[in-house]
Length: 247
Image (cartoon, rainbow, N blue to C red):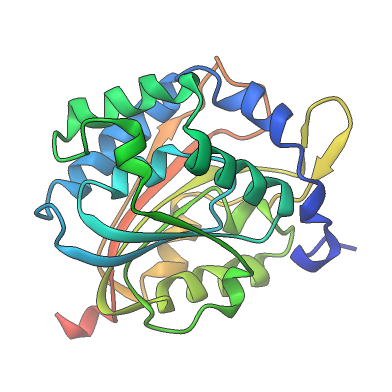
């Protein structure tokens, strides 16, 4: 039997292990994601996006930094209690120094990112909630990083989450996302096991093409400086919500 999102105790997500494995240093893959996404955000004047959402934020701060270049307000929506506690701690007491190189690179690619990391994150609100319960059309922009393919082993549920992600913005709203490519069920730390749904550029394109226009899907190779989770790279997406026939 496949593991579904609701089968998992997300409150027990191993935040410390996850950060140690992925974000205590700036890895080349994240530098590539930041460069790709910065080109997307440079399309928008500062403050031109009223409401943005990080769809399943986890403890990753750099998507929030990127969005701050254009967004006046951003909700970091996260279901797991441990991730919510980490996000609130970073916002309330100041981000850890390990995030400073990420912020510097975001500003290098897009000077509209605010000058200090604390100011950059000041427009973020942490929302402890299930992204599946977000009201349709609540946001002008939605961002998602390593969520839909990393919370289920079921392709139908992956597809449903992508549809909900797309519907979270108004028609004509903007989407930016990153997916682990061909990610199997994986481990964080020594013991904990988490669901994965292997996807690639063709699958991501097939899911989003009927839902969006101006769809762009590309990929980057696996990063040997990361733990070997069994994935083969990352898939990166930008799009506008609404069917291609809308122009």
